[in-house]
Length: 303
Image (cartoon, rainbow, N blue to C red):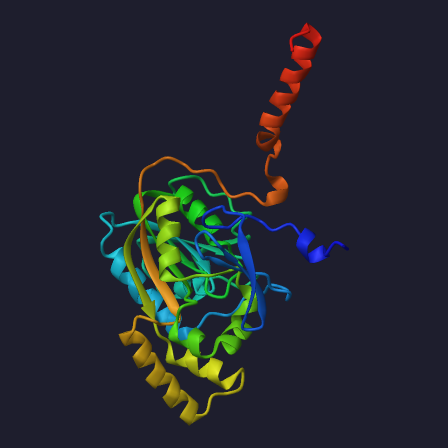
């Protein structure tokens, strides 16, 4: 029987639970693996991963949430880190507030507003000092950022008791349920995992956050774009988009997850490392000890 190279391919552990048992599936034309322990779906996209521009309505929803959160801060001055698709637009909206120090983390060479501290780095490369920020705002919709990496880094950079505002694609939305292939076609090349509110809650608990608020946001424009399959939506398609957005709001099945997570404790957790950089020696320790013990017994004549 010949070996199938597909069966010999190394599969990384689940990003959420660390399990190795997964089931290969095809969802919306994309190859995925579903963890058999926690149900998290990892996207094995064959396309080159890319960044998707921010949605205007989505930015507005995140801006309202950030304004509401900033009012709760006890200090008059706050240091904010903006990450992801909406970062540049949020920086424009808040730069005129003199009591804010804004850091922008981006991989794109886009011009930043005057007064904003821009860092042209990926989140893997970023190395801010611990307990620096009052708020971290991360818009990872259609962004190839592993959730565990984002939460671990955000927890390290946040001050104790401060918050992470997170926006992510909702794979359990009404839109993805009806037009799964179109939804995956637009987002599959830029997603690492398919998240739901249940998975996001588990990520938060695992990473040392408390979920203060978790809701879905329905965006009529986004629904219309998926229905139109990349073409300019007609008036009829836009009307359908508004109708479905209303249904999604009632069913809490909007296409975007918006979460407010509060950091608990001060202990730093280990940072995520790519598999190639991880120390493999702990896994060999037991075998090495057993081998050394057998050699020692043979030399002493025991057994």
